Image (cartoon, rainbow, N blue to C red; front, side):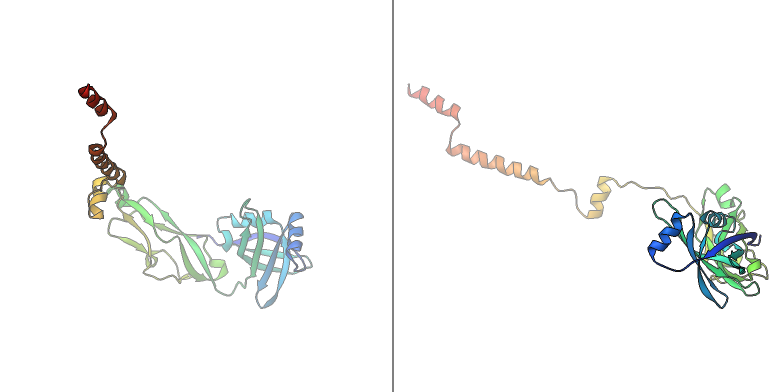
Length: 245
């Protein structure tokens, strides 16, 4: 488990917290607005380079990375990214929140769970591996935060469930997620069943009724037969005239 302390430094410039127009102007200059808080100090509005921030977010440890923040004017502190915003259409980074970190105080963070190996239930029993929990909440000192927790699932078979209590850890980590919470299991492949018209009719409790348009056609035909008895067709009238002659 690798620690998440980066040896690089993010430079920041203090700024006056202002309106949306001020934030837009910061972005037009190639920077993004942010705020730094925590460690018993006042919050501070800053501007930072979004490219450097993206490199941190896309690193192996992601937002759990602890790094140095160097403020123009001399102040330097350990921080981590606790919140960030993207522009919804183009995906540009818009804003970040940074928290000052005391390296001697424990933190609560969520770290990813990485499943390794092919379960026996998949190789020999034809099942599929399903992961229900992808992150686990832990508490530890900042220097002991793992980038992720790896767990071997090669012995997992049908009927067995990997739980939080089964995840590997050491005495430096405390799991805060419920110990009995399922993480992964092997399940059967579900086949899609297409319902037939007969089955749909059976579920409805009745056979399909005759379309209304057909019923109407029968009624019209019966009506025409009755009317024909009173009013002969043109062919019948000609036949009557010939008989009179």
